Image (cartoon, protein in one colour):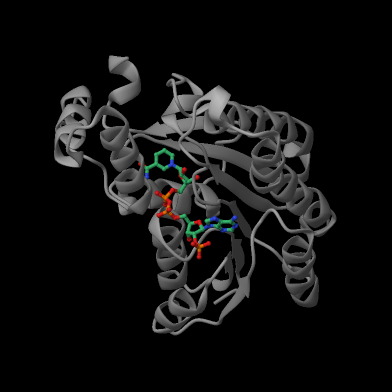
Length: 253
Ligand SMILES: NC(=O)c1ccc[n+]([C@@H]2O[C@H](COP(=O)([O-])OP(=O)(O)OC[C@H]3O[C@@H](n4cnc5c(N)ncnc54)[C@H](OP(=O)(O)O)[C@@H]3O)[C@@H](O)[C@H]2O)c1
């Protein structure tokens, strides 16, 4: 089988990990990143592929430098997933200037530097697939999550721009927008609303489920399946899109 290499950031848990699992099953060699990759590396190796972990925040320059070096050692990259955890659930007046700086680094500077510095390898190959995970709130912003609403919208538009500029090099770039997916992120998110409103997390969960036309939370694999498709060469003609996987939520809003 032809050697395929994928770099996935934010891939130790949740949707990023589920995507790494699909690519590992397809035989991709993986470089994965998060602040602690050791468990995920161990589990992904069970699929019989080569897996290397790079620990560190996407907001740290040293992490980005280390990830670029790992790809340069191999001289090849076929798939790049730019992902990280969600920023804090805070309203505009609760977010400090230092937090704007921290999350701008994690959600914009890190991903964009990684993409920019890996572009020469992608151009030399004349192919690569790139994806990021955004959120349904990019299209339908919610109060209380100003960091997510604003920084994700910037990344989505930056990547649409790059998709237009680099399409002629065979570089296809898309973003996938989850609705409510049952991961640690949604547990934390709904717990925060429960604490704010002094009600139980179960009540917030039920209220959320009522909003979703399919009347259930999604599973990480529901989103990961689409991302893995967009990152593979089966995807020949989709680029510059922000595709929702949200059980119909965005249509209902
Ligand atoms: N789940 C949902 O309902 C939902 C809805 C809309 C949008 N999203 C967004 O989709 C993305 C993935 O969500 P998820 O539910 O899969 O989240 P998750 O289960 O919390 O997983 C996040 C992943 O990112 C890693 N990570 C966290 N901070 C990082 C950093 N600074 N640098 C590098 N890696 C970092 C985490 O590992 P470590 O802890 O080891 O760093 C983990 O592997 C997030 O941006 C999330 O906000 C999720």
